Image 1 (cartoon, rainbow, N blue to C red):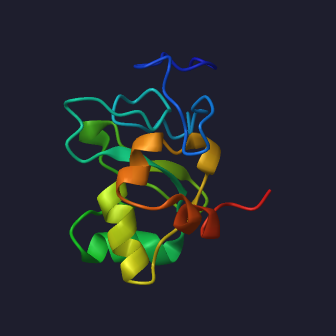
Image 2: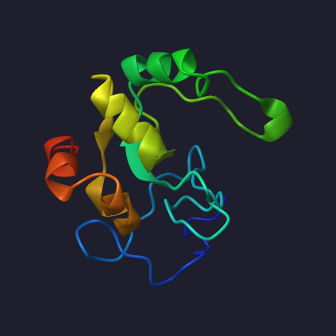
Length: 130
């Protein structure tokens, strides 16, 4: 596996206005499956939030029709477990927030387009603490 992702948009910025940092290469995430929460014209779901999976969020996501925990080898999807980082759709993260099940966010790896859905202050309130 490559240690450095091939970027879709080398100029992509995170919600802090800096260079977008990769979210996860294990498991490999992102709409473009390059490890980054980048977006583009074909990403209608807006996979821009780098989130740290929790059992609570995975159960919530499954309950609303998006099972992220079950492996799908036919799609090259390993299934997620608590602690994994994954690029979530910004509207789904906001929906989970409203339901009290939002996972923490990695601000440095969350694309600036997320700010069209979720204010920076809210993201900071749910940021992974270093």
